[in-house]
Image (cartoon, rainbow, N blue to C red; front, side, top):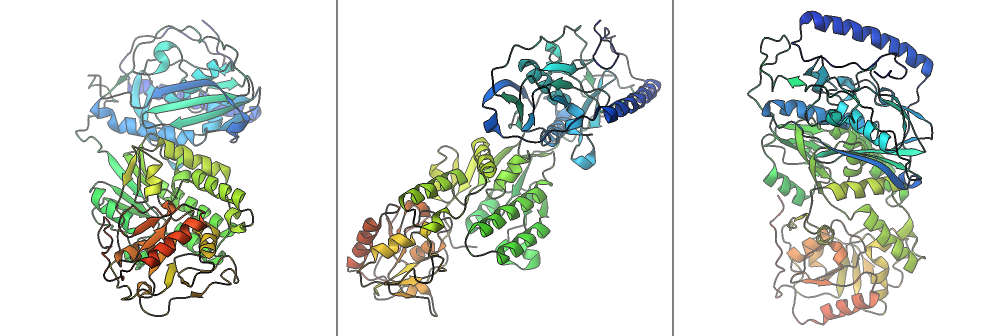
Length: 602
């Protein structure tokens, strides 16, 4: 027998399983109450720390890793408890992921996680008690404590407190002596860091993954202490002791797998995707119910789902912040990021344990991923722009080539946000987008939607020497290249967007604004030489009207009749394409309208 540190307890051989009694349960509760009171008093004196997140770059080496299966019990009657366990792991990992420990720092499982209560996001899962696996709020956290014990041993940490399970839970580490049971707050797992360490704690669709990162290779840790192999635990789904007072009547209802749609950008392509893929059991989370509030911007097809959840206050807060911000620059971009984070956290509260699949908007993705709400689920991402890492690298390269264009470098997202999005996109099952350039970044995982064409509008019967620039007039939309391409040409430019490069930007060019009627009737072509273009709506309108379009691949349109693609940042190629367009003899009405996949917008 080996004394357990700090507790005055000893490991004893475990007796065979006996049927629980009400008296035994009462005695057990009394013992637990006394032990909790004693441990609470000890903790008040000990003043245990709670750790904050660190930066992975400061811990370059992976010194320990544990990977364990999430879905360990295939019995249909245990599905609800398995879903609950995974939900509890999500709730716990939000308090563990990326915490930093100094060398010699004491880690306490319960100090870091806190009590597992319903108010803190924990639900019913299986917990080992008196030899039985019984339902309890926070049940299943022993899978996490087992994994923590395992990586602590691998990293050479000093184990201060650890308790072996009294029974073997099928599929757990108890069969190998690498387990550590925990029970609030009197049975804890504690260890001291062997060096400065960073804990990474994540859920994939099928596994719990823990890593300890450090600054030097780990010294061999102590072997797990030898223990007598305990008997297996029992659950009501697998034992036949129907006379036991704990016996649960197996439910004939197995929780169905449900999907949640957490959406933000209200594009017609996304509305159509939702209408085609949703089912009656699914949950729809949107910023506002546009039908209820008569707001077209938030008008989603809300029929045909089991439940609709909104983030109305967060959406209103974002709207006010954006209206107060400048049309362009860091202030506006930060308001967009903060607003999306608020909406994501509000909608993320509705990701209940029975939701096994999710479809999430790209704007909400980094927050949902960073908060651990997508772990243990399959998920797809509805993408409406380039990944932030790709976008910022493109703009940085443009700044290198054209440092005088200040608006190319006026904002960059925080590094942690960029990293969170990149990690989440790497873990996603699919990306859903109509944007061809975005889809090309995810070969084998992209679900390519058809662009939805707006209702067609007439174009001019004769070709005026005028082009439309959708804009806004800013460097990333290709305004500088268009200005250079038009130098010396007798071609007028109709500006459809705001002037963000200054009032004198178009000096030397003939420019006008739309004045009554459909703008497609007033131009001979549409030109968008953008570095970045998320919503090519004006280009789609031009193609629907039979107007030629000159654009870059960054606009995300498929190759086809009526579309000429030119390289980014190439004013000479753009000039040549414009001249070829005006050299054509055909008029707009005689020209065959572009053939694009899709249908009129609903």
